Image 1 (cartoon, one colour):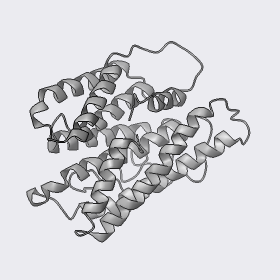
Image 2 (cartoon, helix red, strand yellow):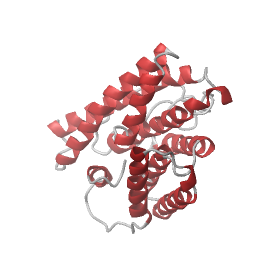
Image 3 (cartoon, rainbow, N blue to C red):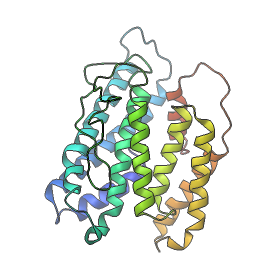
Image 4 (cartoon, helix red, strand yellow):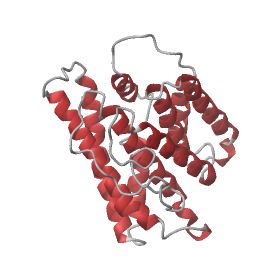
Length: 275
């Protein structure tokens, strides 16, 4: 999810390395780095506020609204300041930016994932929910067919499942981008798979597909070990992500209980099982 250690490492690296290439792109990445750092703290704090009365304003509801607001701001930065600039650097000449392309596609899906988790679960719908600019994919900057967060061209968010379809679409694009540009053992590609598996399990309740996504990611990572960079830190990230994917690949269906799906997912994040 947004704020994961792996994502923040790459955001910080590219914010620094793109400064000489494109000032706007670099500045946008620095903004995202700061926002994701603060947002990760909010997500962890949300885990501690599990008991909630959704019929009145509480500190928990205020926290969830703040998380939604921050996710909106992050998505706006990504789609207005980063993706349009990335569209200027396509082709083999700019292969050094392949990791950034995957990261941008993954962050797009991650911000939408937050809307799914937080926007309607506790009746926190507010005017802060954005009419977001046209979504672009992480490969060539082409416009999303719907042009908005809505379903079938409808921009207004009007049901508790309104974010599911665009989020699935965003994860599909992130997977495609990662598969095309990075080896199976790359930490960013594994991070995409990890969050996608968690999203399928916790938000769409597609348990079998969630397990298959995780297991396939592990198999691909092991098969492409030869492509691992000679970098101790990247190898540590690889081992941690493969371990987390292995856990998700073996998860059974949850027992019926009253806890909202968001609390289950945040527990996984806090315990290091989901990034």
